[in-house]
Image (cartoon, rainbow, N blue to C red; front, side, top):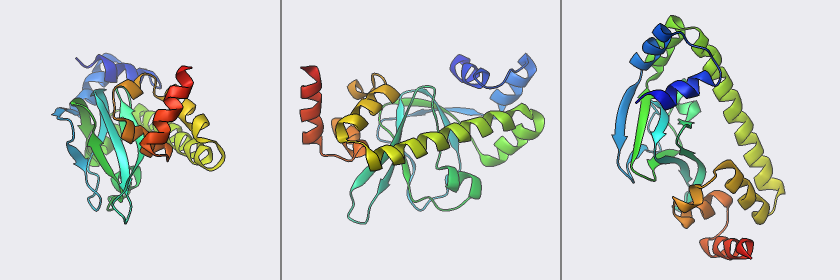
Length: 191
């Protein structure tokens, strides 16, 4: 039941069995129905989530009501509005389930308690944050300097198989293009 999250921890730190138990005790498991909002703009993000099954998205809604997908978080990915979570400040983003999902989650106070009980987790979350920052920088650079076709190929590489699971409009929003243009690109790549 807990194997995916334990394997995720093992990517960056080695845990003894008692440390695994201490870590798992800090997380709760939750079933999330498709279209459920885990965070609304203006709220403080009180949890960091690990996706055990399903897919979440983070998005920003502009002043015209248009949604802009920031990222997708399928199985084995972590998600939170990092600034809101660690600074306990209002979020300008939202988090929503794109599929029926199962997530592990914990609060900032529980995470800090885990850091004290198992100091290795400070290293784990530092690496996680570094990797997330790297991902955001690459995404910004890509949006500024690459064509839509190049961004689509990057999406497919970063999220293998995800385009068969989520709506085309969400992928188009992530790429900064219309669903019609995405459809044309997908047809062209099949040739």
